[in-house]
Length: 353
Ligand SMILES: [Fe+2]
Image 1 (tube, rainbow, N blue to C red):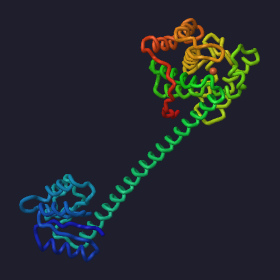
Image 2 (image 1 turned 135 degrees about the vertical axis):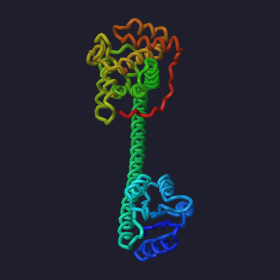
Image 3 (image 1 turned 180 degrees about the vertical axis):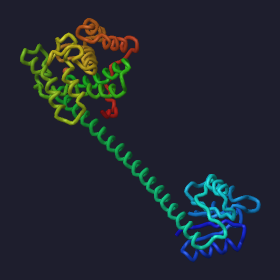
Image 4 (image 1 turned 90 degrees about the vertical axis):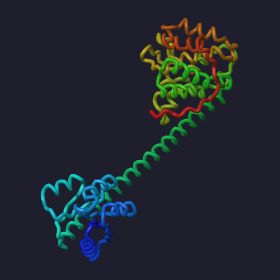
């Protein structure tokens, strides 16, 4: 029910208006001056305020200003015995919505209050809809956030599973993928690459030899020299890894980098003999990290060769097999920052690409 506050210093007017409004289905309260009107407005919610302009102590215009400072949506009707344009414009300037000329007749009162009541109801409805819309948006954002998190967790567990699968198959290189992933990420950070690229490189490193799943275990763990056929089977792991990852819904950069991680700048790599810019930056980084980590680690057919030999290899291939800036980043990481090979699995959030 629409609630109206009548503010007038003349008691008879207050009572008459209240009676007319109550008889026509409105809830009506009265106040004899601005102070008691403001007190009532503090205590209760009103839809419409009808106020006299000329009152002792504080005028109705002051009340208008005070109400507008508190609430934009309450409808304010002023009542005046002076129907001049100036009074009306002053009242509208101070936030009144309409005015009634005294003496007020019933029809005019009901028409003005009815109209004010409709506007207030529409304004309340608009506010409600805006609030509902805001809540809906917030809820939607929460759902999207949760779904993104779920997707990232799923992708991370797929990566972790793939990483474990290769390691079970090829225990001699256990940890190699983790260490290459961590080294690639550290090199990418050293080069000032974006956080998402760093995260992605770590993930790619963790599974970059997934294609070895297709290589017979006895070849992977063979201590002696490999035959040409055996070597060809091992070399095929880049293509196998690429094909495997191409079939799952993971970012394309993962499969593509795995495909390219044995290519070399001068085209001497495999499987496609790509050169320079034909190779992605991610693959350029991964190939250097892969070579360095592999040389520093023990293999079934040789002992660990150490940091100096690993850095010697990339230095001798600088600008030929390996990209110049990446060799510099790797050297600086080990020689200036004293980076140590890390075997830890870092659970990074899967970058959304
Ligand atoms: Fe490899």
